[in-house]
Length: 363
Image (cartoon, rainbow, N blue to C red; front, top):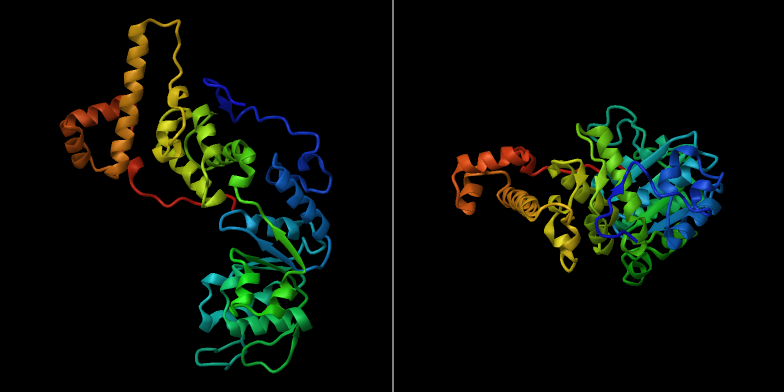
């Protein structure tokens, strides 16, 4: 339990438990951070990965968007007999219906206007390796039939081709929708569903494994420290408490975006609550946000408290106005010169509050 005033240092990670996957010789050294978990549900998931990875079995990964299905698919491939061959990730939801067949299976020269030479498809590229069909629930009924043939007969044809090509490919599929329910509604073929769900594997949401959130914070801050030109060393305990209690509808991907935004806004070496969206702290006792030293004079405590409130106010102000100084100064009831002076005092850059698109370091 994190007490008020305690700082969580990313330089001193909490020790792994004796039954942590990181102590298991099955996992390759480069994935130990990924499989380190304190969640009983995730431990069960990783145990199932250990069971199915060495086989040739088709795997169906289930779970909400952003839970890390792509990461689990890679773990299965990396610990299979095909680990030295290609891992091909196909986002089915991004394939237009008119191009899906040629993208997956390729085409022969002259198959259609513009087909001036043979093009290999994703199944060609994945030969002897693994193909990961993400969001398979989005494919059309025509492509469902084509995929059924691959899974059933282990062959496919290129568009415009007549010969059958052996598909020496392991298939891992993923869905963020209930395929069984889609079958009942006539939206997904039952025979394809049965072929895909030989080994279904449910991945719990981030809310279901909130005990892993402190380690995720550590992992992400380390990642951003390596890729950005700043160094965050510690995390305010209020941040950890709030992030553990938040529901995370966007799962790990949402957590990554929230941490990246706060990382960019933070001007100190400690990731503090004021750099995060304040809705994360609804219902949280904010008394831990400012740690008071009773050994200091009252005047000094007041000064520090005022600076803290001013800094938080300025960041929220610039966030709302997306870094526009004129609008921010008008709302604050001060001149732009006064606002610039305050920003300089607290080391706040208006450029940091422009909208940016976060990256996904892991998921």
